[in-house]
Amino acid sequence: MNISEVIYSTLIAGNSWRTLLKGLGVTLYISLLSVILGTLMGMLVTAMRGSRFRPLSRLVALYIAVLRGSPVLLLLMLMYYVVFAGSGVSAESVAVAAFSLHMSAYSAACFHSAIMACDAMQREAARTLGFSRWQAFTLITLPQAAEIAKGTYQSTIVTLVQWTSVVGYVTITDLTRVINNIGSRTMQPLFMIIVGLILYLGMAYACYGGFALADRLNALRRDRRMKA
Image (cartoon, rainbow, N blue to C red):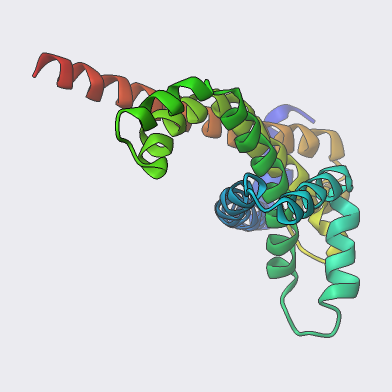
């Protein structure tokens, strides 16, 4: 069987490509919502981590440590089979909740480390010049922290997308489960695994490309301001 026949039998016959697209859509849905919610939660956790109220700061540090040290699959199964068992909440929503918690811990650790890496003397200098604490943070610390955190944050997003491949354990028909089903039905598991790898690589490099495009647009804006 040549490659064209393999492609036809696995992706075209029986409209398997539509099933593949539905699985891809589920993966993108869970990934995007988890990244957005997890990032927002991570910002909140970062703010609490930097609180001067020592008990709150320590509690948040424990939250980060526990979630970062917990396997995502076990967290997902705990949420689905224990926390939300019998609640009527959809499996996709449970997955989003679990991955959002996972994302919040990793992004909070990333943001906190980036803020700590910034020069505190610059903040103090801004305060002596009359800046408020909020102004010193948003105008001095935040831009530097964002640049420092960017690489780690990108990797965190890509890792989360990869980890969504385990949602089949809680009855969700995502991209990985569709690939496995089609491969088993057509007796072409190797070909479908390669297709899956290509799609996951595409999502990963779409993420990197999005950040690269944002950097390019920011550079163009800075050039225009300097010329103006």
